Image (cartoon, rainbow, N blue to C red; front, side, top):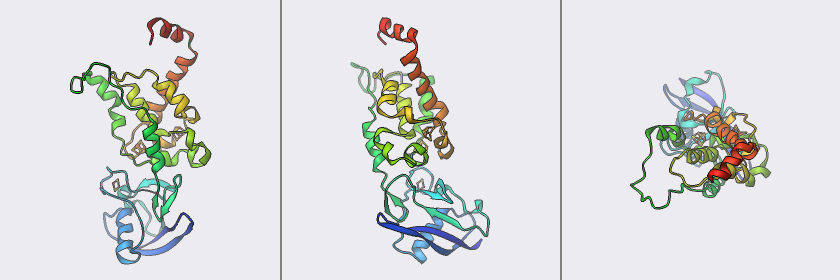
Length: 248
Ligand code: SF4
Ligand code: F3S
Ligand code: FES
């Protein structure tokens, strides 16, 4: 495919700039190959994060021509021959160096999300559930924690001040997964998502769903059902009465 033009953001928390490069590109290569070639031939100290090169570890998230993508899954053949390909770090999280950002926000939110709560008196190994219940939440288990959905959500991308109160789409699917789990003993997952995870900040723009490399239907299958059920529980007097009577 020959020599192609690239721009890569170089810098650290104090500031940086886009640097121009001309790099060899071969048939079948992906953007991560080019970043590695840059390291090998021109910029040995260029920082990037990656691990599997197979779209499964979620480490290589960057923005390519402004779009959040996995660099190991973005083929060079998707760009025009004369196009300059611009690679920048994901924007929503603090820069460490070059293409590497500090995604600790997501681990904080993971720790804040209440864990699976098994029913009392049932030992691990004795849990039983129907195949249909396994299938309902299986989609959410495909998450590779690339945090592209977190990166693209405008609630925190454009509003740093929302971060303490907003867990983000990756953790809304975790809450939905546990909410659908027939053996999870916590009954307040929907209310918790609304009140403590900031579900109410989400105005269903669906940008998270659009960027998910695992094609998880984050908005339709997790966020909207969680929102609907929160509304049911909060405002429907019959649901309220039912909960009082049946103690659900
Ligand atoms: Fe990545 Fe999709 Fe998981 Fe979000 S839900 S972290 S986009 S795999
Ligand atoms: Fe954000 Fe996704 Fe909602 S992008 S606003 S969490 S639908
Ligand atoms: Fe693992 Fe890209 S290197 S997802």
